[in-house]
Image (cartoon, rainbow, N blue to C red):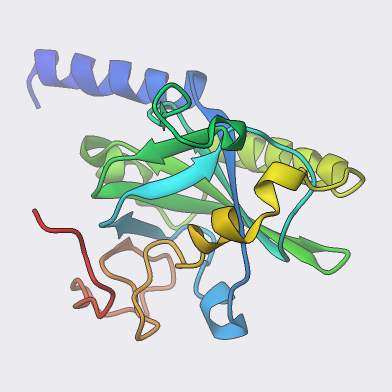
Length: 199
């Protein structure tokens, strides 16, 4: 790798880890879908991904806590600015760095990874910085379990936007699994049965 490319990757890595902030996406997942989010897995979400920047009590049994430096806030253009709606562009890559259950609720912590960094993060073991982020996410989870859900994030209109599991199609397969630590997944993208946006 050339020096310039290495420097660019290093800067991208620093931004990914130092500027990431939490976003939440509450939903209800089938048990077999929940089980698919194994620590260390990296997958691609081919559709636009919605979440909220407003972190409070859970409005559903399962929460994706997304750590990212690249979400776009749509408050200025949204018809529902009370949601704190943020989105990611199509094709984003996410790594599962933790899945934690407590008091009947489960949090799946995802780290959004720029595609050039996927090989850096594709490891059987979490790096120290990933474990630190996962530990901070657990502390946040324990704190919000003591808080009520926000009314604006508990409406059917909002929750219906979040009903599809991230990275997984209607047949219960990953759209594209980029890395899995156990090695028991076929090394190829799966075809989706969920309708995707036109390119």
